[in-house]
Amino acid sequence: MTRTKINGTKLKWEKGLNLPDTALGLSPSTTKDHEDLAVVTEHADMLGYSFLSRPDDIDMLEDILAELPPGDRPLGLVAKIEQPEALSNLPALIAVALRHHRSSG
Image (cartoon, rainbow, N blue to C red; front, side, top):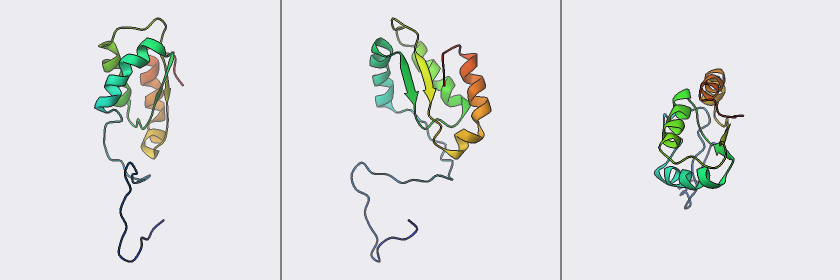
């Protein structure tokens, strides 16, 4: 959509904007995500990581995970490639994921 109603429009609660060709430089991880990771490491065997774009995003996640008690089994990582910047950085994202010796996809 490239146009709005004549008098504009309002975003509804919990809706957002899609800016597919814009690198915003925002962290893919929130404070709530950090809190949720404690539960994930305890119960899950795989973690889906949305909206990562740069290799530093994987390093940041690994730093957070290193502060948590390890779970009973190794935690795999699925990098969800959802932005053009992530696609451009795909070789570097793969290299960083391999460097951390975690099963990844």
